[in-house]
Length: 247
Image (cartoon, rainbow, N blue to C red):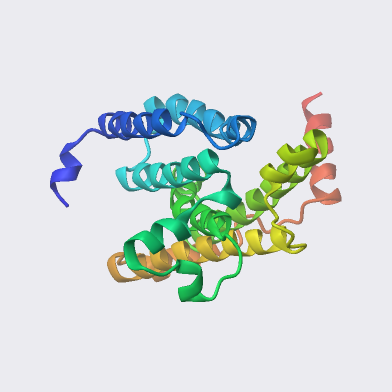
């Protein structure tokens, strides 16, 4: 573990970026549905703009960068084939002689469900870094807020999918939405993203409970009342009084 700490954060980020670019270039060749592939990569482009913008002033930990790039790598596989048509069953059968769906009792292509679960599992920790290092969200809030963010952005993504399907319609809309006839598809996707984030934060909390000597004190302090005065109309009145006093 010590050797990886000798690699500068930005160098590690650029190394992972190079690996991702190789995967991206390979999977950009003849995707199953080119237009859907382009739609799927819009958010990837936005994400990379954020990563490059933040790399100088806010380099993530190497663990976070690794988790982020694993997720992006899985996403690119789904973008190449479209999520509902990733042939993981054919790959599994070629290797083991039986399909993965038969082994676990699935009836549909669940690659999209795996990616939604991976979203929460792999990105909750990088999200925690942002909350902890910028908003100083420690204790209870350092675990709850990343979970909450993963849940809310998962819901937002489902709304984006719905809007895209309404705008583009037809085969493109259906391919991007990828419900495969399941009326509860969006709900299950959000549940899996939430479950993944819950597991990630549970593991993080368990590790910190073991290694962090002041874990209990930090947790208790994070739940203390910082501002005893009520807000709302009381705060408005105080601000008006302060403003009037300045004049």
